[in-house]
Image (tube, rainbow, N blue to C red; front, side, top):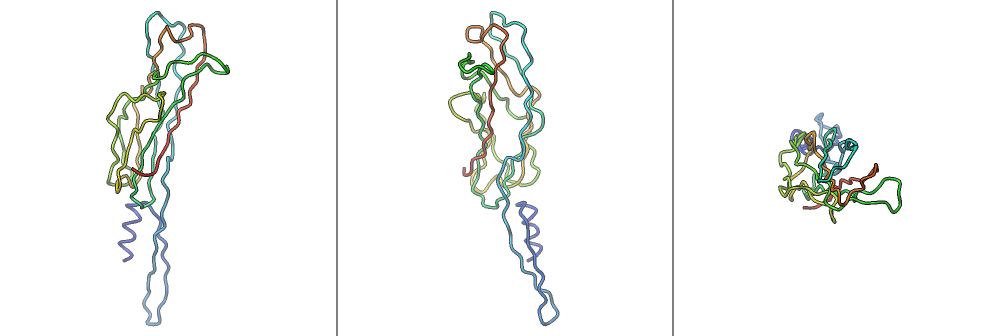
Length: 192
C-alpha cells in the first residue's frame, strides 16, 4: 500500500502523510493519506519592450519582441477536472495620458510556443491551433486546454525569441514620438 501511494505522489505531485503505528504484535502498521496540491500559474515570462521607432513610414510596419523565460502551469490537485490557459492584453494606449491615442484592437499577436515541456505528468494539454493569437481583441483567448482527466502535472511553455508582434499602421498610429502601453493578463481557468 505504501509503494502505491508513493507512486501517486510522484505522478500527481501531491504530498503523502504517513504515520507509523506500533501494533501489539511487534509489526508496524502504516496509515497514509493523500493531500492535494494546487492548480496555478507558477511563473510567467518577462516581456521585453518593443524596440523604439524613430520614424513611422507611410506603410504598415511590424515590430517584434521576445518573452524571456517559460510560462509554467501546474495542476497538482489530483481532481482531474481539467483547465484552460487564457491570455488577454488591454488595447495599447498612450502612456501617462488619460485620453491619449490608442492603437486599434488586433495590433498585438502572440506566436505559437516553440515547445511544451512536461516536467511531470503524462496527459499533455492541447494547444489551440487557431492562429494568429490576437491578444488585444474583445475577449481573452484560450491558448492551452486540458480536458477532463488530463493536464495533471507541471508544464512549461517556451516561446520563440520574437514571440510578440505589434502592427503599426500610419493611419491609426500617432506619428509623433509617443510611448504606448498595454497590460497582458494570463488566466488559469478551472474546468475543461
